[in-house]
Amino acid sequence: MHKVRLYIACSWFNPEQVANMERAHALLKKNPSVDWEGSYRPVEHQWGGHVFGQDPEEDERWYNNRDWQAHTYYEDLLGLNRSEMCLFVQCDFNEDPGQAFELGYAVAQHKPCVMALIDPTCKDHPLNLMLAVSPDRFIAIDDLDTFDFNNFGYEYCPGKVY
Image (cartoon, rainbow, N blue to C red; front, side, top):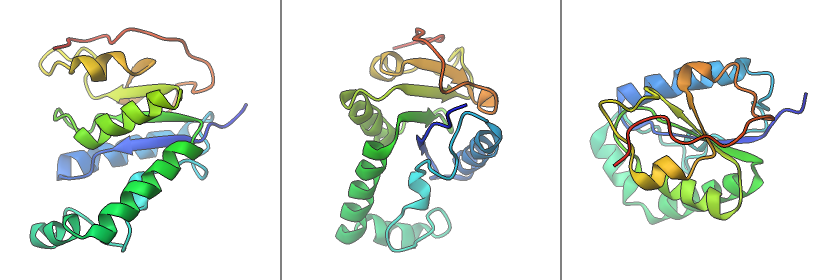
């Protein structure tokens, strides 16, 4: 089976997001269709080595560092360009504008895109129209260990949209 090189977009700006990102990563490591070592995880490519989420004041200094901004942005574009397809993991019920940009870029590059949702029904947290139509497929985070990234077709967003 071909192992797919993914661009794995996750939010990691609060403890809930970090926990869901770590859960998603653990499941993906078990997936036989994923090239874990060859996949790009933006969280692991933060220029300067700062670990976000531990000290808000230090985080603020890094967010305003132009070198960090440029290097992180361009490294992520390289990761998107080198990937075969993209996975967008919903790590909490807040929409992440960074992921929205990455999704738009991936779609413009004609990359297949999958969105993994905490709650695939989106019953209490509808998705924005652009986020709900752009991905080729939606799955539950809990299915990341078994989803076949080589063989899937387009499906509409299964949940509520606004």
